[in-house]
Length: 79
Image: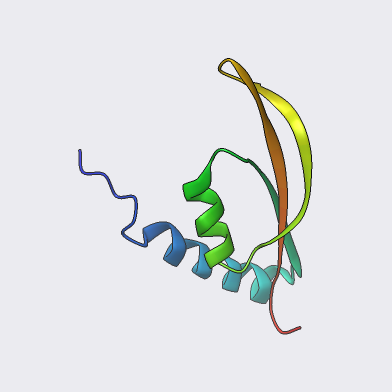
């Protein structure tokens, strides 16, 4: 199977979902939490306009150690 990472599919889908969510459901803010070692996801979230809101250090046991949790948010619609 082809690796689709980097093709922009996730970014385009997310933009469409954000637009519909703001227009149809009147949602004003989306927040998420991700692992600090998931750099591809963090780069995509930041590209989509998410900002970091905070970090919980060593929150999750992962493999032979711990990783931080990063909380992020993005406002929808006009600010």
